[in-house]
Structures are given as C-alpha cells and as structure tokens.
Length: 382
Image 1: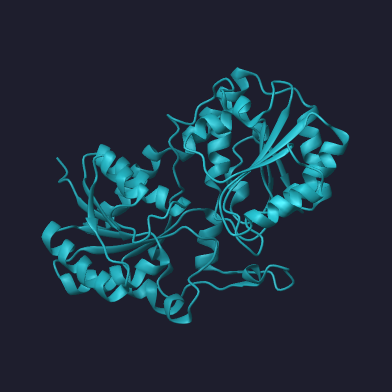
Image 2: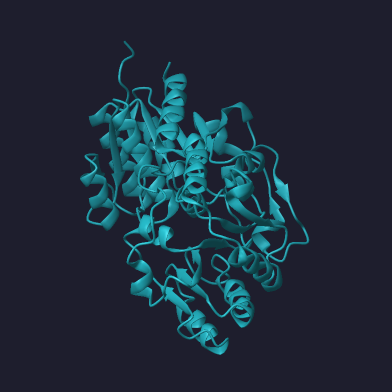
C-alpha cells in the first residue's frame, strides 16, 4: 500500500478570492483521499473558520514575510511534511526558503492561478530553478509560463507583455481547477428572486466578481449593455455581485443609465448555488486577464448559460455548445446583442441543464483536482 503523504498547503492571505477557495478545496479533496493535510494561513478570518469546519488543521502564519519564513520552517519541521504547496505569488519565495532551511527533503510546489507570469524579472528567471514544480491552472496559463503571450496594442497594460519563465520548463504542469459539483447542481429558482424584487417573468443577467478600479470584471461595460437591452426588452433585470472600490461609482452609473430598480448591486452572497440557480445567464465581459473563470464553471454546473469574452483561459471553461456565447470583443453593443439573444431563447430544460452539469463535472470537479495533484505530489516525492 502506498504510504500516505503529509502535505502543507500555504496561503498567507485567505481573503476570499478564487485562489483562496481553490487552496481550501484542494486541501479538503486531498484529505478525502487519505492524505495528512494542514493549511498554514492567518487565523481568525472567515475562511480560516471554514478551513477548520472542513476538519483541516490550520497552522497560524504572520503576515510579514520575514516572520512568515521562520513560522513555516517551524511548521515544516514539526509536521514532517513531504510537500509544501504555495498558492499566492507572495508565498512563493517564503515557501522555497522555508523548505530549504527546514531540511528533511520536502518538495516545494507552486500554483499559478493568474493568467500572467510572475511580475519581477528575478522571479521569472530563478523561481523555476528553485522550486520543485509549478502548476498552471489552464492551458492558457501554461502557455504564458512556457512561451509567453504578447498583445502590444492592447488597451489593457497587463495584456501587452506576459513573458515566460526561464529554466527547466518540464517542471511546469497543467492541472485545471475544481469546483464543488455536488453543491453546484441544477435546481428550481429559489426565494432569491423574490428577495431581489424580481418576478418569474423577468430574465435575469448577472455579473459576479470583484469591482475594483480600473475596470473590475467589466462591470461598467455590463451596465452600458444592460441599458441597451432593457430599452428593448423591459422584462430584463441585472445583478452585479462583488465588492470593491468601484461600488459607489457603479451605483451612480446605474442611476445615470436609468436602471434604478432594474440593476442591483450586491456586495456578498453566502448561497452561491442558490444565486446561480435563480438567474438566467451569467455574463463575464472580456476585460483584464482571466486564468479560466471559476464563476463560469459554477454557473455552467448549475445549468445556466454564460456570455463571456473569449480571452485567455475562458474558452477552456466552455464545455459544450449549450454553454452560451463566446464573444471576440466585449463592447456594450456586442454584449447587448448576446444578452438579447439569450433572453429571447427558451430556457434550457432540466434535462439539458443536467447534461451541462455532467459535462462540467467530468472535467472540473474537486475530486479530479485532488487526484491529479496527488499524482504530481507522488512523482515529486518518489
């Protein structure tokens, strides 16, 4: 019988983003596979409590990097971990340094959850040599890390030059993310619609994601498209779910566009499966960068179509023709046209929604994520 591995996941933020959720889901999945798993991160945060509620030991970490390294050395020696796995860029070098200082032969593994290579030249040049392996969460991220990606004429500065990493590229592995497909399943619309003040005859389009300047997840272009759609299809309604420093600006934008009571801004939701089952379509404009799009996968798993810009790793999330529409350009006009098309269609039947769910589950479950990651751990520790 194969010896169980002792694994330390490292996440010094646990602030609530997709990277944090993935690190927790991976830890839980590995634990179900019989591994001994702990997560090193800040205590007394909402996500820290979720880690503990899942039965995963949380090892307290300070925020400053010098103390972070020393704390990690202590936990690695005490836990005799075989694998130490970092998820945020700020944790990459502390994990590598701590593994080397701790001794004992643990492997240092890094996951790149972003659709760009590390920002600094030293990290792009030396990280791959210092680490034992790097995971890219999509084929697009793998391409960026191994070959780079360049759009010199892009209006988004972060898209103009994404150079590759240097070193032994065979250390880079592609493992897609996982979602809780047992939670995100097709169901009838819940009381959420009524709580928003929307009725059964409304067609609801939603955008999910942080809304921080300069452009968040495309909330401004979404609102401009919403105004065009609503002028032609008055039964349409719009939701923006996510927090950030654009909230006040977006509230004023919605008012200026005449969308009072038609477009709602929500900062938080504790029942994402209910939320997604209560909308008719998820919208993700193609702005900024996107490794793959967890909200897209969750919506599709609930059997809801998605309208998204065909940038970076987003097309990899579209599992079938029933997934919705991919757009080459995310202008208010193109988004509005796609939203009108979806609004005029008959909603997917329950059978069609269940088929869409199964297509997502076959490729993006937390079970698959844990199994593929564990297989890599075993190769690194053999």
